[in-house]
Length: 391
View 1 (cartoon, helix red, strand yellow):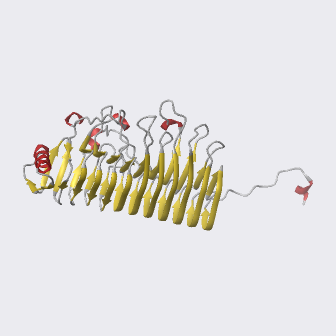
View 2: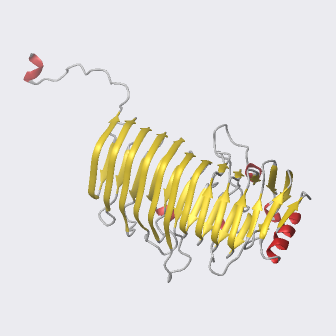
View 3: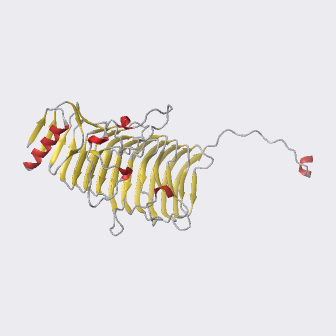
């Protein structure tokens, strides 16, 4: 079944989704034009097709969005439960087309700031563009996700997710407008896509929703993507997360003021009554082209925060031009282990190209990374009184 939506309202889109769902599934296709909307709910066996020329435009008023609640998710990042497009425990769903979901994100911020500074965050919730919880067989293809006020796309506990040929663009003066947050998901493929955000472009998380169950993010493959951020291109976990493992990133271009690859575990990200828990292992990074004002690679465990470990990470075929060195730093209680660096070339605008501390089994092969220092200081004129000064 296919229904065409011509009335330019979110209510008309939701009615079409509900009708197709009730009929057993099919496709909802939008006519060209702008569709102002609050929260929409995508349902099992429904494809929402947004062709070029069609825009689902989120309202610039947080009160026009629903609060999404689920008993398995008592807390929510940024204290926000609102999103433009929501799916919960749905199967065989898709968002396709070369049209646009637009969150009008800057309108949620205080933009009265000096040139080049981040906008001030408001006290009110900032909706995400896409939020899927507990879904299976998810496709997101071709769509443009523009100016989300919060995280652009957050998928939680989803399985078999295929994201390709999407474009995520967010005003880089907005904070917390991550590109794609992959949280406790498995079998996720992201390919041939572009990310330009004010915060992290791609994030792997395993946020614990309670203290008794295990939460795992695994089997994520990212290939042939371009990332641009003043923060991070790729972020791996936070200190109170559970397990992130068996993931692969390849053919990635990073350009930006931030850091290309980061796994950082500072105190400010600890959850209540937690001193660290994350386990990050078996992640490969292959064929990266990096131009960063920050770090190309930054792996750091902060003293006093005892995560379960960062282990078996491989970095191969990197071309680097960065301001900061490659940094891999654990501490006595959280040693970073089994790190492989191979075929790394380029320049670092620092006195040393590498900083490593508390790393066990660090293997380096075919490294041609040069640390470039600043201007040479003037020569020192001898003023001493030892006998050497007499010659």
